[in-house]
Image (cartoon, rainbow, N blue to C red; front, side):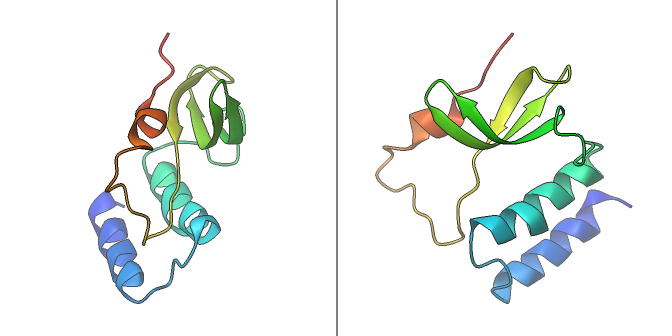
Length: 97
């Protein structure tokens, strides 16, 4: 299956209010897309939930190789606003190398 029908379905469900909070978005959007992209969402050494970083907690760490975080995912509810910009530095930091 390609990503396009999955994203179309997710957009439709968002419009219907089916993802009201962070856990619903994690389960219904993030994990679904990661699985379609080839990540083993059941292997917590690859998709590590609630990963503690040096600056707090990320909802997911994508690890490659296993147990070595390469990217962090921070989940927010649909009504979250980044308007003031205060959260951006923490949310976009990546663990490199």
